[in-house]
Amino acid sequence: MQTNMRREIDEIPEAAARLLDGSADALKAAGAALKAKDPAFLVTIARGSSDHAALFLKYAIELTAGRPVASLGPSLASIYGANLKLGGAAAIAISQSGKSPDIVAMAQSATHAGAASIALTNTVPSPIAEACTHPLDILAGPELAVAATKSYVNSIVAGLAVLGEWTGDAALKRAVADLPNQFAKAVKLDWQDFAADLGEAESLYVLGRGPALAIASEAALKFKETSGMHAEAYSSAEVLHGPVALVGARFPVLALAARDAAEASVVESADGMSTKGAVVHVTSARAQKAKRLSFVETGHPITDALTLILPFYGFVEAWSRSRGLNPDAPASLKKVTETR
Image (cartoon, rainbow, N blue to C red; front, top):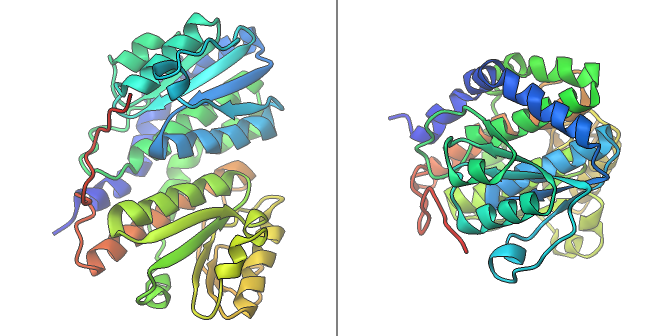
């Protein structure tokens, strides 16, 4: 029987197309607001998978718009009552449910401090939509599985679309418009060869760099959520500053490389760990020692990284079932987590 998670993974191409069509006016308006604000910097407000979407957008904004982006701890507002000086900033709050109290409180605080605030949410109306000056419905549709998939992807697609409108970057706008087609190809890729090498391992590393580090962070979380498996995400550079000491014979590593300026460094780390006896799989044709995983080449370095999450989602859903688990209902988790 097909799981909700698998069904929702398969819906990602359609969900992305629905977003780009149904929220087109709102995406343009948010981009115009950022152009008018001309923020000196941006802040993001999110938790969990939404925070990994925010990390992806951080890299995309810094690489495309040249503005620094910082992640705000929601407890700054909900617990500590801090008053931040955000008059020259823009804020992006991301919440699938739109009602986690600490995310809402931080978004309200940013708006009141003068930031141009954008809410990316799958629930409109909602408290997060009311807290921000520019609420955007990501139109992912109902998501029944506890582990977020299509809402994670659509949050990033929405952010990239706004970024394209803000900067007028024609190449990015074309790449975003083509994402439903690229997703339709990526969702069919098969990474099940990685399952055989995971074997009875209890821990693994997921590596990336730049936007792909955000994908690695999301992948590591999904291993924990759906499969009860310990996974840690690292930059392919940062892992060499200590964590590599744990890598030995048969230690599994998933290295996520996009077709961007960081690909060579990710592959170098992947091949290096392979020489230590680790079992490394990497999404690059440049690998010499690590095993190669299939990927979709979109023609744009930022959207290349995003497509990597689709075959991973398909892999981890099947991996969870192979371990006798139910990826729709992970132990001790619920769909909406309301933290304060």
